Each structure stands twice: as structure tokens, then as C-alpha cells.
Image 1: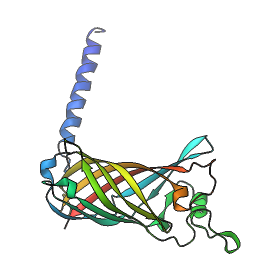
Image 2: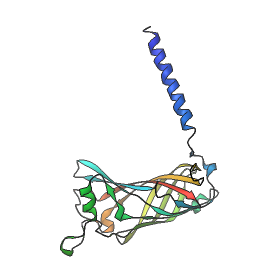
Image 3: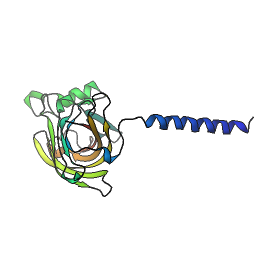
Image 4: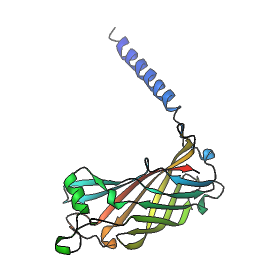
Length: 213
């Protein structure tokens, strides 16, 4: 019995893995470029977000999220380098794990002075692509564009991965998703409070879903 038990456990593990694979095969989206249809897509604000991360005092990383992102993507799988993306990010809806920190990000400057971070009524941020360079496999790209944040516009480069495409089973719309990473310096956008104990460098992680119109 002792000799049989390891084999039984292995068999159960294999069976469980088979079930997981079978379940995964039912996911509507897949990283299959042939599923991408040419056209104009609109960002799904419920499933598109910009995650940012800074180093805090050298003790830990701190993360926040910009959600409710809107915008458009124009793409043709026959010419992916001609793709264009424009998105708007509502800075005023920033979310963190701490209500105190979130309010600090959005509070007005003291005695009419400049806010520490975004201020009480920050303008939306906006990213407009200017260049798309696609890798030979066609599933990764370097996207360069202009980011306007805090009233300042600077060029930003993002490393983008194709995540998946397919038909949303609820609204029946063709959907395409991407993941992207990039780094900016907040001081370039006039947000210098706390540097260097709170890092100037801000790491960005973007998860985006677009629905065909």
C-alpha cells in the first residue's frame, strides 16, 4: 500500500491538471493573432486599468490604480505597425489601499500653495501613440507616445504584449486585450513631493481590453 500511494497521488494530480486544462479551453479569449479583426475598438473601462508602483523609503513598494480608462484603438492585423491608440485616464479616480494616502494624493495645496501630488481637481491624463514597432512574431510591440499628466506632455515608451482576442460571450463583441509595462519619472511631470525617499521613478503596469465597434 505504501508503494501504491505515491502512484495514486500522482494519478490524482494528473487528473486534476487535465480538468484544469479542459476548463481553460473554454475561456473566450486566447493569444491567437488570427482572432484579431481589423477595425476601431473602444476601451472597456471596467476591465482596463493603469497600475503604478513607487518605492517607499526603501522599505517597501507601494501600489495604486487608475481605473475607468476610456479611449480607442485602431488596428489592422495585416499592418499592426500602423495601429493607433488614444486613451484618457481619470486621475481624480485614483485608488490606493489607504484612504488616507488617496486623500493626500488628491488634496489641495496648503494655504493656496501647490498640491503635493495631483490636487483636488486634477485634469485627466492622456496617452496618444506616435509609433508602434512590432516584433517578428507579431505578439509583442514597443509603443511610443505622448503622455500628458499634470499639465505636462512628455514622450513615454511602453513594452506591450498581446494577451488575447475573441468574442465576449455577454455582449457578443469582438474583444482584444493587451498587457504593457513602462517607467516614468514623476518629476518630469512636475510631481516631485517626497523625492528621493519616495521614488521619482514610477513603474507602470497596464491591463487593457478593447471592444470592437
